[in-house]
Length: 447
Image (tube, rainbow, N blue to C red; front, side, top):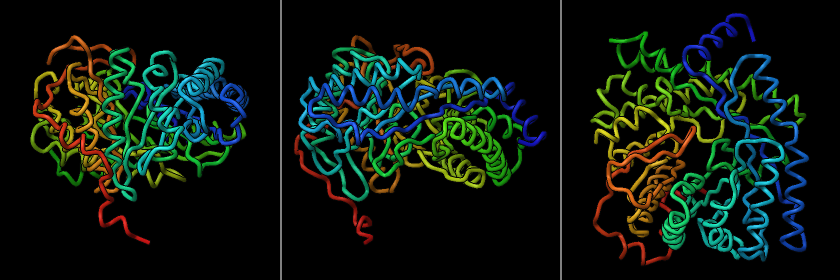
């Protein structure tokens, strides 16, 4: 890094909450399948520990040398349903505990990839994995899960949508917070370094390093300097700032990969907020000119932000991947929390915003008595936005027992707090109970 870049980086870290949100090691488990679930679990543990044993020490050494915080060190693995074979629920629990034990042994924050890809249908392993989720997410500490229920090429598996609504309710019966460790996707990507949705795709190398950058505070500070100027100036400012943030991520990723002697994959450009004031995507949108996020104009401002971040970041990275854009998790963003408490930010407005942001309905608390079919309806709506628009969408919804609208729920740490938001009381049951498969849109036929 040149001297000017170093000084700019120091300022961004010290004043604007810049960090590398995650350095994530992806590890393939395709060669770990054993004759029994117990043997597979043993092989999984050994491979993860062997490959990732130096991940945390290397990341911490880089932090000390360059003064750039790396907030999370994580692992993603091959979707576990793909290595499940004929394992039943108990067998999959053994594999999940092996992942949890391996993550603890190497000292990472989370391990993602307890996942299934069911956009066209279910295998035996897919169904067993989904059935195991209530126990896995409450009996393990560091395991993260995802289920992909739709894609632009395959359409939407409505049977899977229904099953995931029921599963979220079953998880809630065991824990009010465990659903924060699971996300339901449409168009999930193979190289996402962010949790809870990270998994290591089958087209990835045996092991790889992917990096997720952050920096809402840096972007907000930059926009402050063009107060009163045209929206063109705002866009250009965001692009230039995203370039600087991404260069830091590229540098750290290159360095980590070389020291670990593994390939470097991608930089994910996503602006990922934290509950800290000054590190909020909502505050960035408000600096663009909204009195409060959620008011009219929010979707347009978010589209501008997302597009400018991508344009600036692409120029700064050798390979861009993951989700790349702006995250809008309610509980993890101080400005989103404020707007949801005030009623300015509603579920309907959040759904509209997901048409132009990186993911979807994320870290949203709802009453615990919300029917499973209503949750499935939310999943179906988000999947429809993703499938129709060729983008990733997701749902990480958090029913909370014994709460009413307006109550605050604390999830701890970076997961933050969230107000319980009102849900439409009209039923989706007859639609969801039809089951079957929503066909792919006409634009899917591109061969």
